[in-house]
Image (cartoon, rainbow over all chains, first blue to last red; front, side, top):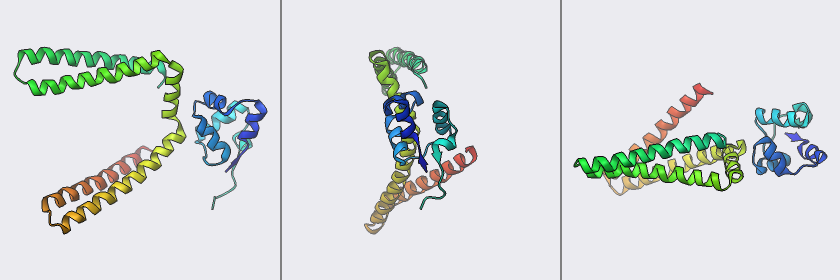
Length: 67
Length: 137
């Protein structure tokens, strides 16, 4: 699953660490999300969407089953 | 759990620890169950030690402790622990299985039975927990 998290974070001008503090997750989680290594839980996806004032599907792009 | 709740829980644990320790010391002076009382008092001492250390860490740097709490409840870390736990389960299963086989070939009957028992407990507990979480989730 692709996402625009890095782009949105940079637009807001905040560091990974700051976003992690706001969302109450570790900095590594933000890094893994941005690299596409980790897909968030639905709760975290909602938190991220609420923080950036976007819909989940505007941030996370489902591309079908991964090979 | 936030810092405030952790402080309350740790303070309660500290009080329980002191109560167990003091009750153990008093009982040891009044009865003959010395070994048992030393064991119970040790439990109290352990509780005092662990909760005092956590309370000290919170007092010293609340921000650092909060970071630790976040690390613990972080969903990616929980996923990692889940994967690591499953890999550990398979590794232990193989290790116990191979050890039991080795005991069988070496003709160590008692050790082989103990190994087979461990293997059985391992598999049965996995099935029980799978069924439990299957109903819960």
